[in-house]
Length: 214
Image 1 (cartoon, rainbow, N blue to C red):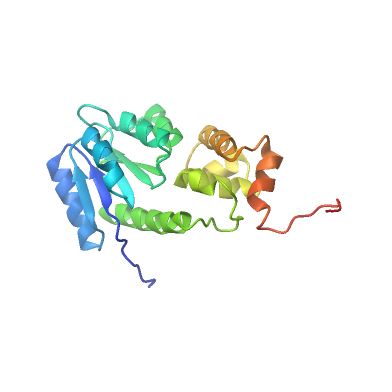
Image 2 (tube, rainbow, N blue to C red; image 1 turned 30 degrees about the vertical axis):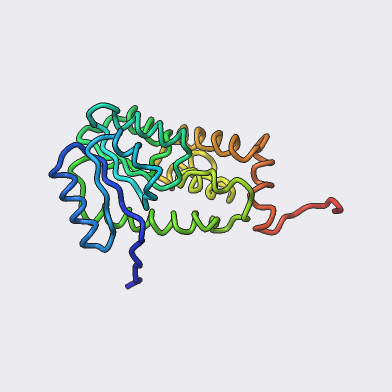
């Protein structure tokens, strides 16, 4: 069994239901994660400059600023840590909007405790690699720190030749959502087209095949 080193930074839980906050906090602390909890989005956003979340568990049905409003704020701030959105109600348009705004996953309540822990562990490991400026199989290209975790996932698929449909199937999101992420990636990296994007991200990584003299 692979060992797991719990992070120093907290899993942040944003939910107005104290029973959910307490249950999730206990779940993560038993597994070795430090936690911080907030009952509303405003308090979380106000505290954000002083904390460095390992990941965020964000409820959609919050008093005041909704979970979607908080997610939009995080997207505008280019918040890089993975965000898991949870909700007692799940519909396709909302799920699509959540993924477009950069959430790593959307889980409908009630969800499996073991599934939540496994997903957060995977996300924490990926975020640690990303924070170190590393994306498996790609060059250490300028601007990689601007990408969200989901954009990094999409970029890796695209860089290795996956179509929007293939990337969506592998990542569990729609081809349209992949397309939205691709557009955001290209904007952040200053890529003019798909070929330019591949040149940027593979320039120091995979061997390039070219007939032109340098």
